[in-house]
Every structure is written in structure tokens, then in C-alpha cells.
Length: 458
Image (cartoon, rainbow, N blue to C red; front, top):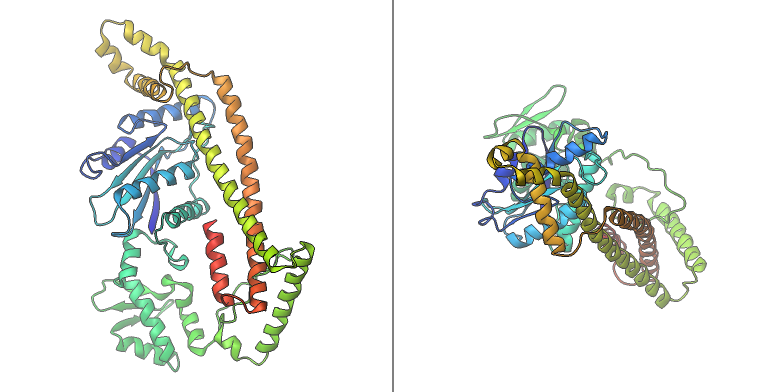
């Protein structure tokens, strides 16, 4: 399990880098890595150089100069080495080989955690990183998927909103005020005859109650009151009253996509619905609809033998997996090409400055005046030496041609992977329907859960 959060850096990158690169926190600097820059204080100079080039090319430079991404793992669940590797996979995939970053894995606290500081402007097309609710949600999904792939647990979806490591750990251990309040409210709702009785039960549970525009509760030892509506949509005063009366929550009606085949019915979705007179007729009708849609799909795709259906499921998933492997290969090649373009460009731009430095007598004075440019030049020279050895450097023109080829291939693979993911979801639903109709395998609810897990993992 990993909890993620991201912070903007507006002041200075040097202080943030000094904190994450601390020897005592990183096992003697063993658990340190980087991409596109040196894993040292020099990274700040390289970040600044990229922003300077972006500004020269007319890009809009954000006030945020870098981002600080933290990935915290559960206590005792992961070794420092695996956490560091997951952090590298995370940074490489999320930043797509376009942003310089420094990665440090800290082991000084009870839980292992990664710090990733990356430039706010990328060095490929000089676009600024956009941080909003959508990108943050996608970021957490990438982190969760990598945790699953490495055998780690993942925070349940209902707990995955706005929860930092401390709050999640407290909730998991039953020590959070909000978590305790949730459990107490749930328990009292079950036995309460009406709302007044519910309030009485909460008082018996040692909660102080404050009424007004919003109802609030405070447990013994708790400093401040907690508004019940802040712990979830099912805990507002109105919803508590509805739950006591046995009414189902009001759900937004989603317009179904008629082109899609709906998932299996969850017959355990609502106990109250099952008690209604029309439930049995409704369930039978829905099952007949599922049957007709499934049967039509099988006919259209000539899947009239169960073995053929199983083979089709396996083929779709293998194709999806193969496309994912191809995409990883292309992205790995892209990262290398992007690095070469960046460092060759920096080398060529700053070589005259280095030549002047080599020629002057008072090198200390010259270096003091041109420190930033010399740091960037030397970093690019050393990186190129490590990447190419004594081989001749490729031309920028040939690298840019290769970069475009890889970009085109990447776009095609993204489209193909999205198509196969949709196809896998559909064929999994069809097979689950067939198994259900034939009384084979797991029951409907278990199959739904497995399908969802597999699709999330994809």
C-alpha cells in the first residue's frame, strides 16, 4: 500500500533537495536516484536552465518552480530497496521521460517513503506540469497499480480521497477520531428506533452533541467537534435520518450507454429493494435482458462453444498484455532519446563558456561568475560520457527524427491498448454472464468483483 501526496515548491529547490538527499535518511545515500539531472544540489541549476531555455522559446513559465511528490508505504510491508524501485517505476511512468527528477527513499521513520522532486517545466516540449484533481487522481491510480504489480496492498477506494499517510494509518488502526465516529454512528443507527433515540444512544456512547445548521459530535478527550457531514455523504443529519428509517440513499441516475453490455446484477445491492413486491419481477426482467444481449454477442462473434469463448478471453488479455510490454519498450527508448537530445543541446550551447573557462588564467573568478552555466555543461558532458562512452555522438537531427518515430508509435500503442482494455472488459462480462446462466464457477457478486479487480489492474 502506498499513500501519495504532491506539494508545490515556489521558493527554492536547493532546500528541498538538501532535505531529501540527507545521508542519514537514505542509508548513506545508497537509496538515491535521478533522471535528466545529477542527483545532487546541481539538480537545482539544471532545473533552472531548463526553465530558462523554455522562457527563451516563448513558453509560459509558472510561478511554481518544482513539485515535491511523496509516496509513503505501510509499516513493514516493503523493503527499502523495493520501495526505491517502485518509486523509480512510478516517476518514470508518470513523468514520461520528460521532466528532470531526483528520487530519494527515506528509512528514518517507521514507514519507508519516497521523495520525488521534479521540475515544473519539462525539457522536451517545455510545457508546464498541470496539477489538479484529475491529474492527482490519475497519479494515485498509477501508484496503486504499481503497488499491486509488486504484491503490495492498496487503500480501498472508499478511503482513497484526501487521506494522507497519518490519517490512513490512524483509520486502519482504529485510532482516528473520524473513524471512531463513523463506527459509532453506524452502530447506533442499526439499533435506533428513531432520530431522538439515535441521539440518546450517541450520548450513551460518550459523545457530546452540538446541534445547529450542522450536527457535530465530540468524543471524550477530543479537542474539537467534528461535523458529521465531513466524514462522508452517508453521515449528514438528513442521511442519518433516512438510514434510520431504512430508506436507500438517493443516487444520481446515470444514463446507460446502449452500445455497452451492462455488468451483472448485484442482487445483494439493497436488502430493502429485495423486500419490495416488485423486486422479483424486476430481477427476472433484467436477467432476461442480460441473457438476450449476451446471446446476441455470442452469435455475432461466432462463440457458440464454451471452449471458443475461453480462448477468446485468453487471446484478448494476452493481446492487452503484449501491447503493454511494447508500450514500456517504446517509452524506455523514448527516455533515452529525450536525454540525448537534452544533453547534446546543453553541451553545444554551453561549450563556448567552457572553452573560455579553460583559456582564462583566473579560473576561480570566471567560475564564480559563470557557476550555473558551468555546472549544467559539466553535468551534460558527464552524462553523455556515461551514455555513449567514446562513441561519436549522434546528430540532433537524427535524434529528433527518431523521437518523432517513437512518438507516433507510442500514440498508436496508446490507442490500441485503450481498445483492447475496453474489449477485455466486455468479453469478461460476457463470460461471467455465461457462467452465471450455466451455473458454473463463482457466483455473480464474486465474478463482478474479480472483473473489476482485473480491469483496475489493467
